[in-house]
Image 1 (cartoon, rainbow, N blue to C red):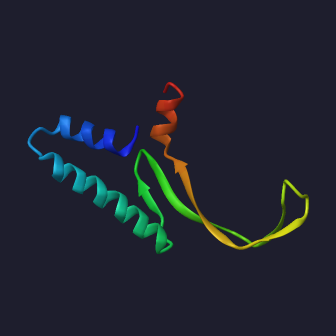
Image 2: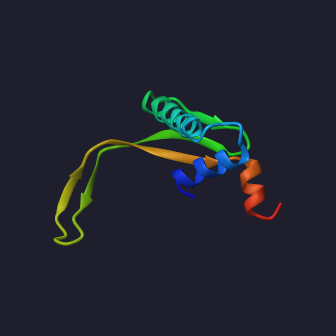
Length: 93
């Protein structure tokens, strides 16, 4: 499912809301999740999962084409851990 499909589904399920308002709601939710993660916070959606940021230390990598060593800088990457309800639903529970 892509963002526009999500907006469309929510708009269909809530005919009392204008389509533009649903778009604004979805954008606000995603913006707040991104903002919280950028600030280093964890975002937990009960039953769905938790978004967090993990730090990867600087390391020495290898260029796959040439085989030479390359310095890879420290970076922060998003991480998602599924909630129990989502895991159970995916596994037929």
